[in-house]
Length: 314
Image (cartoon, rainbow, N blue to C red; front, side, top):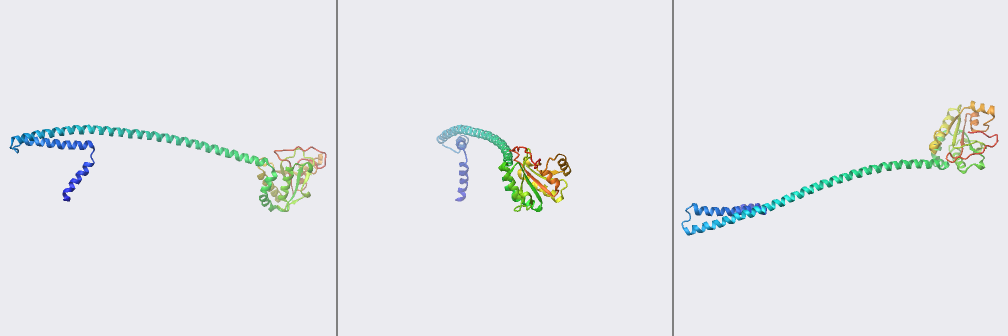
């Protein structure tokens, strides 16, 4: 029984896969086959002896044939409809694919545009960052020097301690009672760095010598004799570099000064100019380092010239 049902199952499965037009076509062909078979039996064979029966078979076969041909027409019509549907679906799919391709192209263009904008924004941010760095640097270097020295004090003390015992004199510009507060605080920070609580240098003259006349004295200047011993020259260089690196651009390359004793002492002997000045001090003592603290370079303060023995420029 199962062997008999197996072909029928295959036929049923095959039939379920057919389209409506195909089913009509196969069914009509089967009906046409029945009609043609009936006519062939009635007209071409002697199987049916009774004439009346043969006539009825011929008529029935003709009707069946007509029915089958009609089914063919229906199947053709259904097939055309199905073909049109498939064509329309295929056209819609093609249009959808084209639309998807155009959308993809637009998306890619948008991504490229966004990438360009992102690159431009990144460049602008980098430029802004560089400008901000310059602004921060300018703010730092144009701000109070004593604050910068205070923050850098531990580093400077470590840097200068190897030269403990080094003689140093510190000078300010103008009478002490008229010296601006920024210069006084800058001197105090340097004194803390160099004195007993700092690098333990030997600071002379009670810590500071005010110069009553120094014309337009500004900035910080470290002086040392051209004939200074190697250790003294190294200490002066270390101090000047430490100050320059701490205070920034306005001071770089302007801090260290090498004094020629022959020149300074000759000028002093011939004109009397410079007595008590930092330059003459190191010209007379090659073991000495001098530090002159003038007003802030960004806010210079003109000190009136006053006749005094302690005159001269650093």
